[in-house]
Length: 379
View 1 (cartoon, helix red, strand yellow):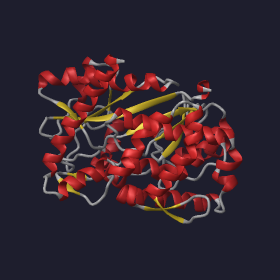
View 2 (cartoon, helix red, strand yellow; view 1 turned 180 degrees about the horizontal axis):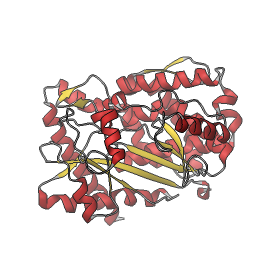
View 3 (cartoon, one colour; view 1 turned 120 degrees about the vertical axis):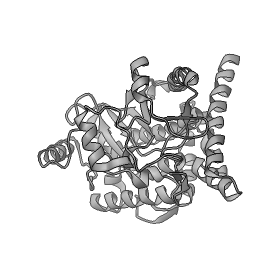
């Protein structure tokens, strides 16, 4: 049954800086020496993209191998990788351009400033059947807040507590301001062409929303779903757990569209579902697992962690059928102990400074990588 699994790949954005937690931009130098890394408009963060794999055993190494090479490059320069999805100890009043000659970067800096200087994880699932792809997009958009809540890791900005669990999603400019729940591929193509023509979108990539279709030639040639809402997840085991839950939800829809496509099941119409999902995303960015969300089936209120627990129970038979039940285990730990943002804020409440918490997070990130590497050697 495992051949039912979808292709999966990740776009991983990372901050670089000192072991003290201060951000230091080296994206251009990294790209020069490690060409498979990609620069972002601000040089304080960079990105790498993993090749797609269906089997989860391959994904962990795909995530860790580029990080090991990047750490080897950073070490002689007394630099490291930083956890968190915002300029936690940085200076958000500045924009540090990675390419002064890039007109697109100039446009981003002028239009958005440091609001876009964040680190995140984008999860891509391969889906070539277009009607099923758009049904999956609708389901994932209506449940995107759950994945943000599991991943929230940005409660700080400029050395201070912001009051949000995901400051990244709170500040990041969603563009265009209103994105419909796409009915089908034709609806998506017409909408993109209209927004390109009127200048709301600068190019086909200028669609910054919780989830979007992706492919080799957007908006026409599509082959995957891209979940963009997640904060940076530094623990590869947790990232695989989040990905597993996402894939199980999509596989359930592929088997039973009549049970999981919000347009077919919900008591709400498409416009109401769009509003509900946007409201849920905002609530999740503020309180994550403790947020009150509204279910897409009927608009009824539900505590975020209760919704996730229910989904884990519902997805358990399919997870066992596919041999994926062990990959979900980190999610139960998150529900019990809290996501990274909740844990960091707990440490601050006990008297630790933001600097101390970030420095502990740097060490934890290194320790997680070492533990995984040791366990793989033993196996």
